[in-house]
Length: 576
Ligand code: PEP
Ligand code: MG
Image (cartoon, rainbow, N blue to C red):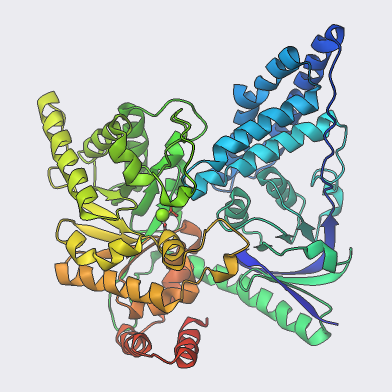
């Protein structure tokens, strides 16, 4: 009997192969006290566990092919750094010595403390980083318990040509799997913002996440199909369906080859309207991928990555060095530096407790305006970078005009400071804002009067409009970019930009999804920014589109009140 299991498609592509189920039992952590004479021996046992974990990760890192983007290795480096960091590597030793805990128990106590700190963080992206802590801790625990079963390492020899189904996977597992020739993976937990998801996209492995209880419904060695586009895993299919997916696979491969040819082609619609395609980056090293796909510039540089895995905050020179690196790589193309989008207690040593709803708390520009010691060095560095090439500054999470005016005043003060220091900057450096809170979309005309550009952050705009935590896989199914309220807010923002005669871009995930391109063009969007991997496919859809026709269609959709007709028309427009 055919069975289809639904999750969230986080990395596109199709796979047909036999399943392999990873049964990773919940680890039983023993808790006992160590007699005083054996304490140092227990410390040595813990240190040995950490050393083996490091060795394993280094080995995995060395298997990453040189051809994959820098962010892939960076994920493994994050775990290696955690093993160097005293929070996980030496704090348990203190617990063993002071509380006579056994090594596993000490590590568990420390893990619980770190996870609590992460849980209180405001930014959804960094909150998901507690998964990294768990992945590292579990690796050490398995070594200490001599329980290597249930890891991707343990079944690595059987992965080739298989579809891996697991409760969850670590970034290290993902690299290993790709190396072993896994066809696709499906996990019961996790969402599109996790490191594992980002890695799967970078490595081009079809993947579906958040398929709850998948292993309960599947058998080992069962012929299955993964459709990373639809976010489903199917079993029990007949010959006809398998044939259809084999054809889709071939089509997909053929399309990938065709896409590369588009790199040098202009991004214009069939009716000759030029569209701008920018790329999103997280690390300075990602600039190479931007050039590889021929993006016209960087539309979103997420600078919070500079703040990760450290206790201090980056100073002005460090910010500047990163920005100049990207500018140099882009060789004259514009870069849009987003001021840091962190929560209150990330890497700043201020463990703010009591924020019951972190996504609505002190994050992004709210935090920067409260913590000028954090913000001013970045402002100075962005301005100074503007002397060396086309730099634009972008403010995240604005929700009211006072915040905007405050940022503009601070920027003026910073310019004066630089003049006094005799340091150069571009007097006319464009300043823009992200529209990612419904209030900002509704008030976009007021914001637009003070700004040089707007950029729609759909990841947050959807979260805040529909009241859905973007990191919570229980409510993933409600996360709907095509909700009429979301489309109205996007339309309002684009119109506000047009009236004020300033460009409006979109840099949320929606802009990089080929299914939504025609709809967005019809809404009047002319600037898109996305992960470099999506750029050529988006370009293809744009080159096949007729803007005027789409605008007429979308106008009709926005005026359709009947939900059935609305859905029908939207579906027609978003079908690839
Ligand atoms: C967004 O919210 O759409 C966005 C691009 O910002 P981030 O995903 O970094 O929150
Ligand atoms: Mg955002």
